[in-house]
Figure (cartoon, rainbow, N blue to C red):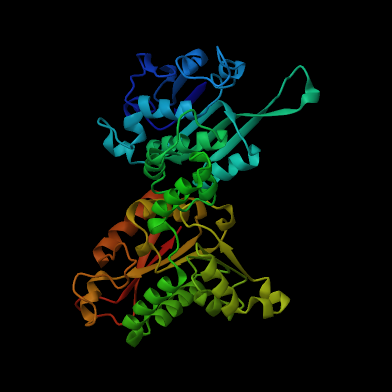
Length: 466
């Protein structure tokens, strides 16, 4: 059972520091079910590959266990695919051998452990119960390029057809800790089995290793069920705990909170001013194809539809219910055919790469980022600036300095209870500058609303151009 991890980050030998394993010294580790060996087939400044070779002893797996198959147990206990394919044994090995890297830490390269770098992982034989389609549905939403080669059941007997086994390569720009977490969770999900008892402790593992990505994964329910061996009560508990920040709130609660924010800002008609400012900037830049990320109930799209210069308008949101409201308010079913062809509403997470978002002239992100905690904000940054990568990005967020002008807002609180942060103008400008430096954009800033001489405008807008 072989897993290789490769990078072309410069110097690529830093992979040894991230894995806490010296490229010059092969190592072996005893595990309850066999041996794990770590070695480096290649280690140069331009490319380094680390290999984890797992030797599973099928006899050791059953030695000393009571058997229901009579003396000596059943043949299946000793003759099976477990020594040769990636399974929960590999997940255990990742935890035992690369535990520090799996947790996202590095003593010698702490800053590199937090940095996405070019990485590829190759699993020599991976069982995929659900086939290549399911394999891709698990890894592609996480931003990986997936290459899968299916193995014949028996190459000497073509009539037997294909097996469920694949050689799989995953490539992406990702933090090493994230890559290992994805493998740790999803390998046993693809195998749809585990070699040990699944109980409450496994819920803790799934929540810990799924933090920051699993809650918004489109296959999260299937992942939880398979990871927890179809124990539905455990899967339900894990999903409830994971939901936290990423799952949409119950609609009535979300609508009530949005109403609170609207009342707070009502005297300024801030929402209308935001939409008008965004529309004006889009017109000035000649954008024709626009995607609105976190489109909500479609207010911006409704305004843009009135101008025929906008030939394609796409809105994406994580909430099914919100999209239904947008669909009704836009009156899509009642539109003439030519008008209907201009607009599309998509359900999806803003935290994962999505090919449907590529190729637009402009992307708008209106009062969205303040609802994301920092790990999720980092994921969204890549989706927006690296993968979606439009020529123009318009992004608005509250100006925290202006909050003192809201007399009904208690000191030290945010405008909306779901906000994870609210930035000052200096903080927003510093963040925008870092995005420009990292992804090749330039930025200018516009105030939205009454521009107070002391604390600025209530809303701040960044206009990114590529």
